Length: 461
Image (tube, rainbow, N blue to C red):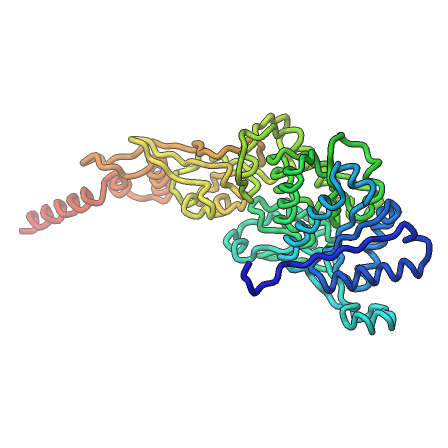
């Protein structure tokens, strides 16, 4: 950060136990939080258990007032300190750093001209009271456009709220669950209201303090999360717009750092986002059931999901249906032409020649499931399927002997490619002499033509 750029500022607001005793007191508190969220880059609200029980309603009111609610974090003064075994000041410093990192992300805003705004709010907060901050998703558009055949995120949304390339959100359909962000293996899709780098910073801080697990919940579960069944151990409670907003990428990152992650959906089937939460929990279940411990200690961790998955031991019990991890297979129709390797945007495919053998090699830790290879294969010989065994190594998916010139023995390329060309030429009625010329190198073809020319000249004279 440059000297001219001020450090992100986070304010604290302490709530009194009498918060819910009167409408006037609650209104004053809401305005104080809303004003602080406008002045500062983030707000940490410290309150009693009564405030935690009302947190879903409080955030809803703040959103209606035009406050930057995604940058407001609640800390239960009694139960969070007990759950984490940290002092209050130590706990607050963790959340302040989380908010400072979150401030690097730009939130989505809409203007609600039909909003009912009190005269007091209009005078004190101006047009800000007509703003509405949204938990929509963002995408790294430049990198996304380099994957033109990928549609994983579009297919993942249970509400059909994404369209186009790069994906655009249809505001009326989107429920701001964040589920789609886990569908992008490259990690290009994210929710600014649940910033990936801020979550990783939180994981690092928790790990350094001896925290053993994160408990992810939504605002409506903030008060009852402490009574939810789950594993024991020191924990932090992370509140996101929906539990589905916690990406699988950060789940694996937490596991690398020695933290377990549990999810608590308070409303269950009564929630409008339950379809997304259910899918997310199924994907999390696949991770927990099939991925073992990390294969080592890692000072740094990649952002791509396949690379993260390759850092874990695997104990596969069933084929995955939710995790966007892929394997490639090739049928006998593959001619090893190399088109797929040339088009692969991540270098997950390459052609290799060793002596008289040409091989198509695939690295599952580099594959982001974009389907460019499948779509562009001229023989339609490639298939992508979901898998759990991800390894940072190239494996052979197809091979062929090397064809050699029948005149001089020079290498011509994969024999499978020439056999495929021969078959097509025969189907189209080419002459035998033309077909056999496939098996001559360019030098020998020229010599053959030259000899034929000399013979014709000799005959003519």
